[in-house]
Each structure stands twice: as structure tokens, then as C-alpha cells.
Image (cartoon, rainbow, N blue to C red):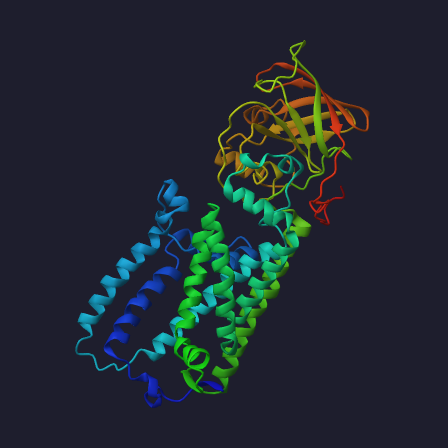
Length: 489
């Protein structure tokens, strides 16, 4: 049998409080190391806390905690390998030096233990995991971290995927599994708010996040450091319970353990404690969860675009005719000008493929408001595909298009991310529109499966393109039609 009790008796009366010298030195190292790992060292983080744009931004900043790194090495190893943990190694070095100095200065100290300080360090670790993991879980529970593959991505050769994007696409296909992972992370993070469930929560967190960490290491995903971070913090929480766990499950002996908790001075402090805890739990589970729901279903702040494209036009298309400046170009797999094939998504993205190398975006995509800035569609894969965002003037049967692959300046990004659409028609022909290289093409739909495009490309060459839809179905079904309250597709 096992008995685990949290006691508020004075520290001096708890048997375990007589710490050995090695335990004191170990705690000094751990205290400095985990403070460095948890307390944000990025001043911009404090600016967001002091002057947040909204309650959501305030909660998101606390949950993110400026992540866990303050030094980045600009190299392949710095993104995926050993060097990506540079902050950790430096924190270890600082903690060793700090613990050494602390030990020297404490040689004549009469302090017998650091029980109280250890308790509050564990509280800080618990809440850091809880905040971060709940936020981590919500972007899976409302499946926005790894969206279902687009039509163009479903028609991308496996060898053209970077390893991490292939892995993320697989999880995106299994979107119910992604939702389950999100629920598990939210539940496990929530368990750390309460002392009786810390052990269970820490065990689940260590297991789930270790799985995420080693998968991202294997597939070159850039989330391995952040997930490893929560594994490390969870193992630190379990460290206190390891002797009892070993004795109970390995030696099969009865266990009776006492762990210190501070006492309440009076009823005011007691009710104050419960009130603060209620507010924290309520805001980070329910309020933050609602904000994430609202962003997914009501605002469209996702990794994938949401503005509807041409009605009932989604699919893969054969390029039946391609004329450049009045000259028809025959199909050639080596052609870097003539389109090889094209794709229309349910949202306003037109994709075409040519035999041309493009820089591969190795990011995971960032949820934004404006569809032009949503890059998840083409991150992590090669294959010569270009992505055009478009807006429809159905009265005049005209498309206004914008190349999503281009590099936008900071000012352009701020201009674009003010709303869902860009307003390309209003900007066309103006200085701002010219800087964005807005294109204007007419379109015709002679049949339900044929689209004819005419217009000038970015080089001012005249195009005349006929697209015929290839009728095909996918074993994956139509789960990419994630429902929202904004539009019907």
C-alpha cells in the first residue's frame, strides 16, 4: 500500500528536511538552471505583458513564455541538431558556476535545507508546464497546427516533401488523432494545477511530449526543443516522487511519504489562495480555450486560407492549352515556362507547376488573419509549384491575383494582415498594388470542368490558358473541408 500526504507542519518537524551536502549543491544547481529555463529573458515579452493588445494576447504571451531559448545558432544543427539546444548548454554552464559560488558563500550558513524554496520552485515549474501545454494542446484540439493536406499537397510526390512536412501531413490526414493529442495535452496540463494529480499529470506529459520530441528529431521538425523542454520539466517534478515510486513498484514495499506545503496564516489567505487559483484555471482552460475556438471557427486565423475560391472549382487540372504572347507551347516535362498541371483549392488559391527550382521554405507556417500570409500550403516541399492568391470580381468575370511565394516587407505584411482579404481590385493600378505585383486575369467557365484564363503575367507577357479538371477521388475523403462559421464552400 502507499500513503502520500502533503503536510503543513513547520519545516523543522519534517524528517526529510535534514538535507545532505550533496542535495543542497544539487538544489542550488537546479534552482538556477530552471529559473533560467522558465523566466523569459526577452524584453519584448514583458512589453506584451505590460501593454497587451487584447486579453487573448496577454494569455498567449504568458502561455508561450517567450518559448525556452534566448540564443539561436544560424545553421542546420542550430535548427534541428545538437546546436538547437545551445541555450540549454549555456544555462547548464551558468548554473554550475552559480551553484559553485552559492556553495562557497554558504559554507558557514546555518540553513539545514531548502524545503520551502524547493516547494515554490516546483510550483513555478508546474504552472509553466500547465500554461504551455494547455496552449500547445488547443492548437491541436482545434486542428490548426497540422491542417489537412490541400489538393495540391495530396498531389505532391513523396520525394518532394521535407521529412518534417511529410510527418505533419500524415498527422493532418489523421486529424482525429490530432484532436485526441490536443485533448490529452490539455487534460495532462490541467492536472498540474492541483497537487494530488501532479504525479499523474507529469507522467502523462513526459510520455506524450517525449513522443513528440523524438518524432520531430527523426523528421527534422522544429518543435523538438520546445517539446523536450516540457519533458525535462516534467521529469524534474517526478524527481521528488522517484524514491517512493521505486520502493512501491520495484521493491513492492509499503510507502508512506510526506511532502511540505505552506500553511495558511488565516482564512483570508486561504480564500485568497483559492480565488487566485480559480481565476488562473478558469482563464487558461476556459477563456483561453474559447479564444482559440473563436480564432478557428469565427475569425479564420489559421495556417490554411479560408476565403472561398471559384465556386465548385476545387480539384486537379490538366493544362490543355498554354499560349504565351500568342504562341501555343506544347507540353514538355522540362519546360520552365509552360504550366505542367494546375490546382484550385476550395479557398482562393491557384497552384501551377513548372520545371523550375524555388527556395524551400523550412518553416511550419504561422496562423495569421490574411490569406496571402498563410504559407503552410507550400512550406517544407519542393516540386516547382507556384501559389497565387486571388480575389474574384464575378460581375466582370475577372480574377485579381497575387504571388504568395514572394518575400513581403514588414510594412507590406502589416498592411496585408489587417483583414481576411486584401482588396486587390481597389489596389490594382496604384503604387501599392504595383509594389505587390498584382495581376489581373479574365476567366471563363464554358463547362463545369473547364476554366479559361487570359491576362498578363509578372513579366508583362500575354497568357491564354485552358484548364480541364481531372475527375478523381481521394481515399482520404473530404476532411479538408473543415467547417467554420465564416463561409460555405
